[in-house]
Image (cartoon, rainbow, N blue to C red; front, top):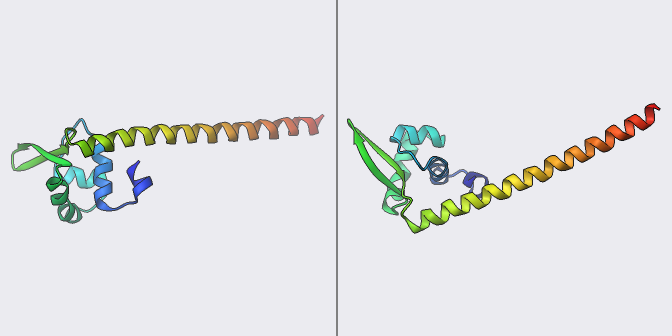
Length: 117
């Protein structure tokens, strides 16, 4: 959802991916793939996300470090709440558009049937 509102910068893509999957931790490769960015690009921006404590290291598996969204950070809490509210608005808008299309289709169908008889 963040990408739809804030654009497709690498930071936004990473936060969007991690917000959508905040119950899990990921390797850097998984985050790059999930966010749809190249690993070198992720390495360029990831330090800022760690420094801002938006993302935290959770554990190490072999040589791989795993990371996840820092759900204790007040900024992240606000982002998650915003994402939830944005999702509700998008669902409402889509629902209204579907209803509009259905109403138009019903009108066209009704007119078509009237012209046949």
